[in-house]
Every structure is written in structure tokens, then in C-alpha cells.
Image (cartoon, rainbow, N blue to C red; front, top):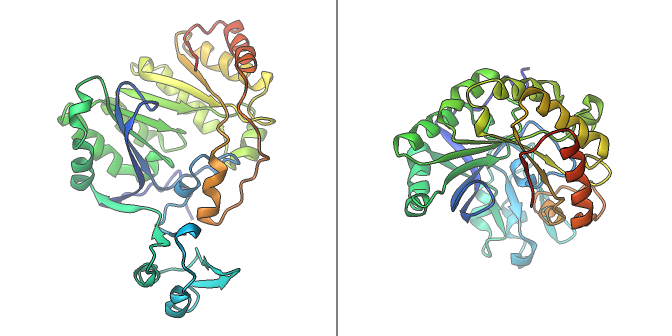
Length: 312
């Protein structure tokens, strides 16, 4: 069986788990950020666990539940179990969960995503078009947008036809052919390079960093290099080490000294999402790094020679 890297989703519809309007941290200006379902990585600190699976799945909102047991009474065999006064869904179930959502009177059971045709998603994006004229645009995030394959490419083309500024937040863990097809239609490219060491990267994310680094080198040696911002999420006891930051900074400096680089402070809020998708957050309750700690990491980067360092 082929891996997710070799088999991007190419359906006529894309699964989107969120559309964030008026975003100001996902690129220039005021933006609309579209979050695609599906990711080939399994980062221990994932900020969007609802975007990991490429499939549409039900999620449970405990605060909305009235414990009427109608979901249990109307469930199909193998679809769910009811324990601890709440439903637990069988995520390996092969069919849909429409019946559970239909019979829930309090809307405590909902799908985690919605399918969109390109026309439908373009209509959503263009609702905010008035803000894009002030330097904003649309950002495609996830999950991993490249898992939606040719759909993403066609959507990027449509955005450029409408003169909409486009950005992507990507791991680059995708086929180089897809990346090449997307590059002419992207105005801003955020690339995560989380961990330089191959063994640690596999441990933290369950995939190799080799392909990611190869694709970064390809783009930073291309005519699209000035569109790129490399980012490293700072995860305590994992990626936030002097050696890792130094290794990444030296790696990208040696390819293109003028590259932009950003260190992302740890976000402790993601753990609250995990109960919605019946997952457990794998990390202790760390806090954000202090300004003094962040300055220490900035100093490490600047000692490598990189000047285009983006600070929070």
C-alpha cells in the first residue's frame, strides 16, 4: 500500500475542518485561513488534532450533551459504544455517522469537517474579498494542504484568476511534483522544519525529515526562494534545544543566507482540543517560553549569520 506521501487526495471535493475569518497571524494583512483535513505527520504536540485524519469523523461536545441515550439507541452495529455516560465512536467504522448526528437533539454529536467543491470554497473565500484589497488574502493550512492534492492546485489557480493573494502553511511532506505545480500560484510559503536530527524527527513526528529538507533545498535554490519563511515550533524538551535551532539555522543559511526564519513560541492551549477527538495529549502541561528564553534562542540563530529573523 502506498504512503500518504505518494497518494494525495484528488477528489472533486475537499474536506475542510475550519475556515477562520479575519486571521492576522497567517500571513500579511487580514486573511481567511482554510484548514484542510488530513496530515501525514503525527507530531506529539499537534495543534490541530481534529485535522489529522483524512476522513470525516464525528466529534462529541460534552457540554451540549443531555445524556438522552438516543445515539446509543439508534446506533448501527459496530458504530459506537456508550460508556461513562457518553458515546465513544468507532473511528474504523467504514460508513458514515449520519444517523447519530440526525438523532442527537442537542447537537452534541457533529462532524469534524465539511466537504466543499472548488466553487463552494471559492464562494466562502470571496465573502472576505473586501479585506484582501488591504494587503490580505487567503492562507491554506491544515492538516497538510498537499494531502488534498490536485484540488489544492486547482483552487490556487482560481485564486490567482481572482487576484487573491495566496499563502500556504505546509510541512512539505508531499510529492515534489505537487509542490512544483503549486509554486507558481503561491505568494507566501510557510514551511515547518521542526527537528533537524533524523532520528529525533521520526520519534517526534513518525516520518522522516529527509524529504522535507530536500524539498526545502529545492525551493530555496529556485526563483521562489524569496517567498519562503522557514518556521520551527519550539516544543519544550523536544525541538527547543540549542543544538536543533543551531542546526536548522545553519542548514538554511548554507542554502540561502537571506532566507526568512521564524521561531514559534510554544502554544499550551492545544491540549484542550484532544478530548473532542478522543485522543490524549502526549505532553506535560508546559508553559510558553519567556521573553528572556526566546531571546536566548534568537541569539543562537543570529550567531549562525542569519539576519532575516522574524521575532514575536
